Length: 224
Ligand code: BEZ
Image (cartoon, rainbow, N blue to C red; front, side):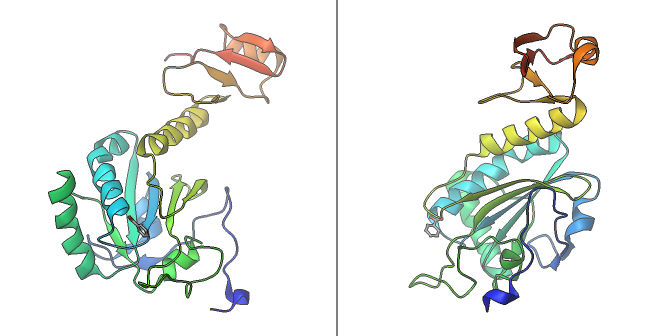
């Protein structure tokens, strides 16, 4: 595919491009599938590959944690539906977890290309076995269909599922309260008062705030 055909770059704040696709749970329209929930949309280079198998098993195991947070899961792998169906059985054998969420069949890598889930070149760039370089991406999309997080990992490195949950927790906590979250934050830790909240508003909203510097004010989460 010529480089001039590239879709517009996706950035944090972009509306997640809509698409229709076949999945292991039937055809979907992305925006309809998201509905009024959050979405974690994550891609894999290829079915029946070792790292991807461990990742899908882990996301399947953690699905109830995502559901508790109002988050749907959607996988994508650059193979056919038939291949996905067989692979899901393998994932259950290997990890003990049944994949319940849909996995998009993206054999032609059209959606991978739309979401820039491939390497620096284009969809024709494959290894000697025909595996595309490299589609191990994560998109966190909110109920307004806005892309809130984009992660890209190399094929050799399995993702950290706990980090994906932590990002969801940080985004949702920040949306509900005027706060940000510090390095290595996990739910229950102190948060940081958002820089836009100043003076009296800050002390009213966060009576227990601790100003380490005027620009760095820690606080327990009110009503936590
Ligand atoms: C894996 O999932 O193990 C994998 C996929 C593509 C290339 C290399 C490894």
